[in-house]
Image (cartoon, rainbow, N blue to C red; front, side):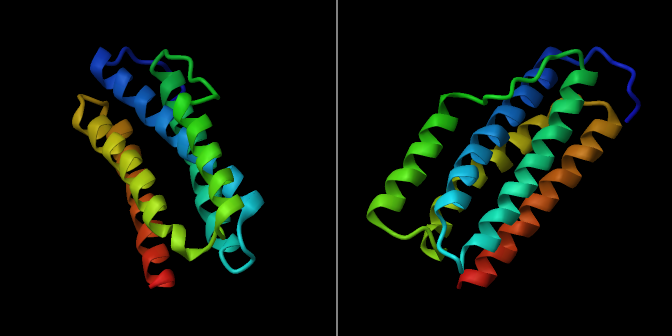
Length: 148
């Protein structure tokens, strides 16, 4: 996508903001998970962390081109995600057993991708969002296969 800005439909820009917030929220959980993960689960946690870090930057760039200023903090869910992972680490291991919680959190991000893609986005934005969504879906499928 070019660096020129465009004036998106308000709902389209709002959907991009929601997607960015959810991506940052999930990233916060993975940042904590990487700190506390068991050695055998750490590579997978890092892959999710790296994916969300890169995708949050790419979505932030789309927001900037759309004339919006992306935030770096996400929503209150960032704090909740950090706390949940930290508490789980106190009482249980951070290992492949957390895959169900990961799937639940990632489904919120996938839903936000679907909402953003459903809005009247410029074709290159819709294409980019579809590519990012597919990357996340592929990683989730690999995680399920690796932990089953």
